[in-house]
Length: 255
Length: 245
Image (cartoon, rainbow over all chains, first blue to last red; front, side, top):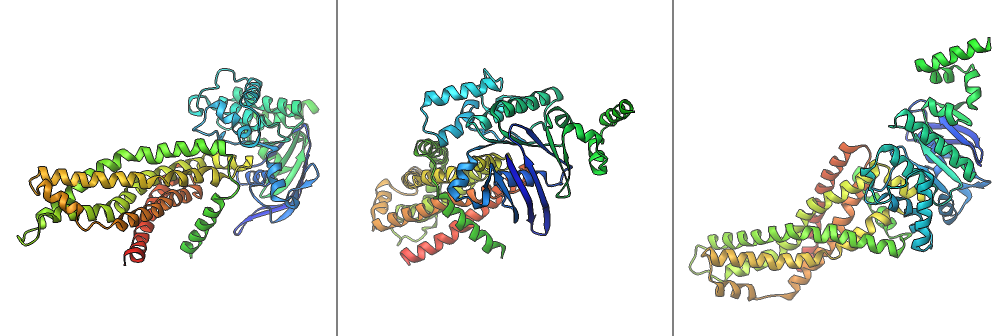
């Protein structure tokens, strides 16, 4: 579980996060949504420890990040997995090398033990024959799956995903969403996903936090988001014609 | 003020490079890869340029000797002195700032743009140690290619001087051997080692801390080349004053 209390973050004169608090539960897919510039990425980077908030605390299963020693912070980082928007795979390493990388860096396992683990996670993300290919030789969807495999190879307690569906076709996007949800439940991970893809919200949004101008505007579940009267949320959610029709159908069904 | 801030950031970066080292097993492979890219990969172009510059120095010297009073061995002597004292350590380093420097800035800059550096940091890896330290160690072999450059440059001068009819082989060799001061080679290698450190770290600094996208990677490479060259030129002056002045 990750608990965020009143975090503030500024860059020069720009006050990006203005006091956000929330709780992200274990074994659930927690989504952060909001328009571009709402502070989603900065918020996620604060959760990852890449940015230090000026005010407020972030605790991971009761451990407050700022109160940990440098070594404890490094150890905690090793319990985090991250799937970046552009996958962020290392160009110079093969798929296998990318997935094995965190194990080579931080474990004392033998080559065969690492190989077994890599084979297992690549199979888990449905990548069987791509071990020796380089990131440039595989599709965007496959790159995302490699990034997920790399993120889970160390059995993380916390999984963070920054717009995992960007640049993917709708079918592959759903596959990636479902894979993240399955992995979250299977390994009982606290997963936080940054997205503005409403399909993802409807597919896997067990808890949704809506950010607007650096503030938490609304939070709830994917079922509650349809019923909310919060204008900012409805303007965001129903910005597409498809979702306008879905809302219309929902209202008609309710009446 | 910006320049001062950059110098401060650069100093902090250099300190960070030597902290929290990466596992030796991984570092060893990275160092060997960088030796291949930065040193072995630069050998060809440096040998090529050294050969022809050596030749040109010999020809220019010969053409400027108009007085019969000036001994013919001066062609070999001037070629040796020019190549050992300045061309090999300094001119080659400026060439390396273009070749190796832009490679380092663009490769690290691309990693920054594509969030690969963020990925390293999230994993808890000291990205500066992982990316820059192997380059510094690899560049410590730079004096070896400068030594080769010295030999090839003088050889190029001999070829151009003798086969171009500007000097006899005996005169040229006499000039090369005349008043040889071994400390000049030591001075050249000390300069080379300092420049090697600059060549590895300034381009890394520009790549690591760049912001923006693909266009900015190109701009960072250009800026890195300019600053690496400027620092090499300034340090060349300071080191020459300190060691030979």
